[in-house]
View 1 (cartoon, rainbow, N blue to C red):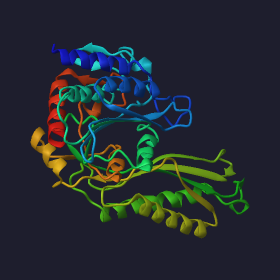
View 2: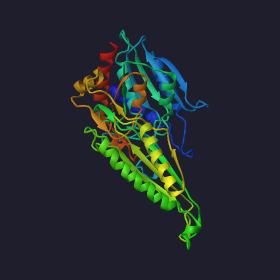
View 3: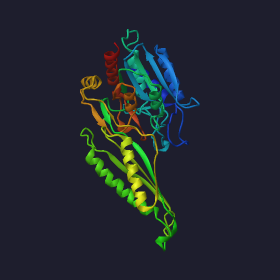
View 4: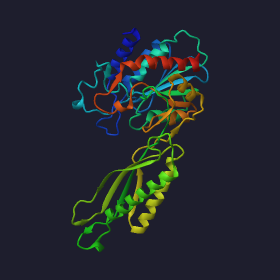
Amino acid sequence: MPATDKLVIEQLRQLVSIPSVSSPDPLWDQGNRAVIDLLATWLDDLGFHIEIQEVSEDGAKANLIATLGSGPGGLVLAGHTDTVPFDEGRWQSDPLTLTERDQRLYGLGSTDMKGFFPLALAAAAAIRGSALKQPLILLATADEESSMNGARALVTAGYPRGRAAIIGEPTSLVPVRMHKGIMMEAVRVTGRAGHSSNPALGNSALDGMHAVMGDLMSYRQQLRQRFNHDLFEVAWPTLNLGCLHGGDSPNRICGQAELHFDLRMVPGGDNATVRGEIEQRMMQIARQHALEIELRSLNVDVAPYEQSADSDLVRLAEQLTGHRAEAVAFATEAPFMQQLGMETIVMGPGSIDRAHQPDEYLELEQIQPCISLLQQCIRHYCL
């Protein structure tokens, strides 16, 4: 095994061993500061200028901006340091202990996406001592798996501003230039409870919710007709009615019901516009049924993302990988990198099919090709 691979594996072992779950559930939610501090130590040893940007008031959640060289432009290699929660009982090995078997590295975050950082460090180490014409920036963020507050903090601060950004999410080293946005919403219908023997004694929230669900399903069809992007496997926006709660007894008129849904908009659509349209539709139903209907967001939405097919970064990535840039269903921090003014693609080792599930792993065979690919990108933008 090459020495580079041994160092990558050792660094990944240390990263995986540090719990850094982010979750809307406070029982699961953790900080990522220990991961950030470890990465900062390694990058400082490579000569990078280190800046730690605190994302939470207590500093337990933070971003790392590590810069080699100076001046405008350059390349940003970006990734998130948090993981999703895990069910230890469903793993064949300890999820917080990197385990090598069958030419794979098993561990929580091994592919999504702590595994990207040792590979980016190895690519950066290979150019140590070179005279950089434009800077190389390694960016590590907090809370991508929950609120994306790390990426939002970068946009608020207005930096880093490279010429191009590569987000190392698992794509099996195939460039991705497009993904859908996501918004999660709740609709609460409030009526008036009463004895079920006489409908006049109340106003059923479930009857109103029936109208709400039918209207959302009709709106879903309208979205499919209005928006289409052939690069996606599912070429239109999706609207999923995820869960429904309401009522308390079969012999009572339901006084309140709540529906949760998500909507994944294709590039070319706008989350705020769609939400406004849904809100108008809910207000109309409320008037028709003399009900109170409230629409509220369950999370801060992520915008659809698209990088132009003829941009320099997409053409370079396609040339180096031999793959045409694709579209994916999952959301990333790419829209936030674009808000900072950078051409952005998503391209990293491992498969998204392994993410968010027991026995997550990174293939050993991805290590050297990823390092080589990142080195070539660094040469293009920084040397």
